[in-house]
Image (cartoon, rainbow, N blue to C red):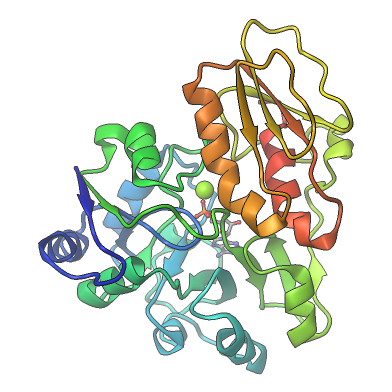
Amino acid sequence: MIRVVDPASPAGPALDEAAALIRAGGLVAFPTETVYGLGANALDAAAVQAIYAAKGRPPTNPVIVHVHDAHEARALVRQWPDVAATCAQAWWPGPLTLVLPRESGVPDVVTAGLDAVAVRVPSHPVARALIAAAERPIAAPSANRSNQLSPTTAAHVAQGLGRRVGLILDGGPCAVGLESTVLDLTGPVPTVLRPGGVTLDALRAVLGAVRVREARVHDAEARVSPGMMARHYAPRARVVLVRGPLMPPDAARWGALVVGAEAPGAAHVERMPADPAGYGRALYAALHAVDDAGCTVVLVELPGDGEAWRAVRDRLARAATPA
Ligand code: AMP
Ligand code: MG
């Protein structure tokens, strides 16, 4: 069931019900500023296991724990280096996830057996109110079936998970629209594991040296090397990234995501914002819309090249990776 919660005053029966459900070991989908999350009590292994079951998520993919403030984050980790305090000060609440050595009370299922746990303080008022009312840290990956498109509205969640989730809190569309930046602080140099809402330039401006794990190829042109990128964040339609003019593909019904290009003959066209933040906010909803329009192929005009576009490029490149 979808229950609306006003972000301007996130209180009331729907929120109370959601908090009670979390405390009882149940699942609740809720809005964050990045994407909608599928949440459970992070300290209850069986509850977190139910997230994996609902998503069909492989047990090797750890989940992020959402807490109300840095103080609560510290309770989940064995070390809180100066760089963690600096990050918390600069970006929390917000779309930055920190990976730190876990405290023993964090269940194995949360970290997929890893010694480190990923923690984040979200800024969305409904997420914050839910964490506060539940009085529990909330483990939450994106509220979609594994490998499918992330949801940026409550309707996307309902469409993707159906009856696998009993309660969906609707707090409106997500402001960032892409997943958080994941920053590993367990090594000598902070390392970005996943680009996201906080850019590399912003991290470097505050932290100095920051590495990027290049296990996956971020440049869309490098998709000639399949296998280097895990397919993820993908719509049902086949995604084809294009530089220059769009040529109609050999498909009965095709859609297009364009910034400036024309898309003659497309059954569905999404005109995308020309700035990276706006594009990121609109991306998943645009891909959902192409699927809803029944397109089997979607041509995506590649947007900008700069560092600010890294997270968008990352998601597009992985969406375009063949299954
Ligand atoms: P999602 O919850 O779908 O946004 O995905 C969470 C992502 O966060 C995972 O796919 C990992 O990339 C990252 N992550 C979560 N926990 C950890 C961890 N303990 N160590 C490293 N990366 C993590
Ligand atoms: Mg996800």
